[in-house]
Image 1: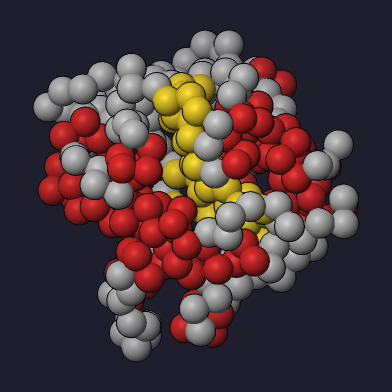
Image 2: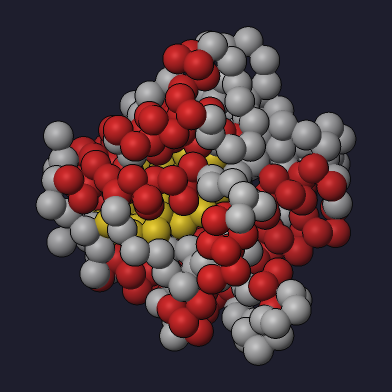
Length: 300
């Protein structure tokens, strides 16, 4: 069974090497070894089983790319900012929600009778807040709902069947009432994510830590996160079955320019490790990620 693990990183762009770009200052001992390059502007890789290429996230629309329209573009293959007329930050509005309801990568694969899943773990507290109107659903959560799929919950996280959005559980275990949730090493989280590829054709995982760190312009936090991300992605790739591929992409830049402290118009990296790399070789913008995933899975 061919399978794809799609790791979505919020706010992870490609910038030139320099002191304000932590992606260029980090050594990338795991990902760099597997890929043969760093996610830095100008370090491209094109090989049958490895790809690092820049993707346009502006999509021909004036202004700075934002999360809602960028994520909907990634998950539907449609140019959301062009259809909306502008880049929308944060959470999808009614029109973008309709686009996700109509089609998204989880729903599309499920409708094709393939198995897809969202690997992130949720707490019951989240859904209580959502019902009370205290939180709004992100594009990934809306995609799961549109696909009619079950959410992975705290018990799945504790059993190793899910991964928390920050990879190590540090954010969750620091909350009142969740002190019992153990920290996990990035490498262990990577192995857990890879394990899902044996049961699903498509596995989606979201990490929005790059965007949070980028907005704070926190260099120490950036270095710490990149170490976690490197171990997570490297171990995930090495633990994957032979016919599975790891795909990494983002919705817009941020972390690659700590001088700015906000979203950028930089391209975002498309990283593919595994036999699916050749299917993504022609991609030039973020709307082309979903169609390439479908080609990998033999879905029309």
